[in-house]
Length: 173
Image (cartoon, rainbow, N blue to C red):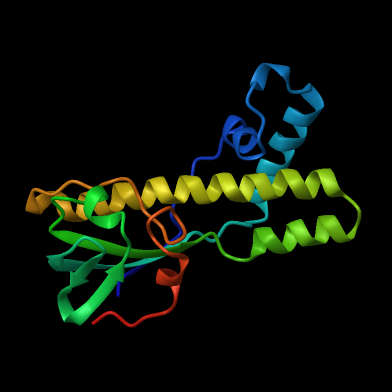
């Protein structure tokens, strides 16, 4: 299983605010925008993001109305899969992370009573995960383009039609 580390992520103030539930960027107080910029700089300078991914690409051997069968007798259950991936020939199984350091800093801020900093840093972490998902899709697209394939939008356990139980650890061979 290939592992890719140090994936470059592009984080923007607007994406952090979106993940915090703020929709109108122009109505955010300048102090909040300034604090987000400070936190973004701290994330970079303190190396709080350790983005990485591991992946495997499996041939789809059969598709039924509730599951995908993969090479090696692995099965992915989900009623929405056939409608999301009707013409899929392969499935990329990916695990990715931004590492533990950012969350540790969020906890530290919260323990010290710096709740706004903790909340905004948590939003930065969520924006980082979003950015990582986009980078992963680009990477996988590059891997499969030579075979004439395109990638779909990412799907994750817990989405409607894909039970969270599909997230459990399994060895795919």
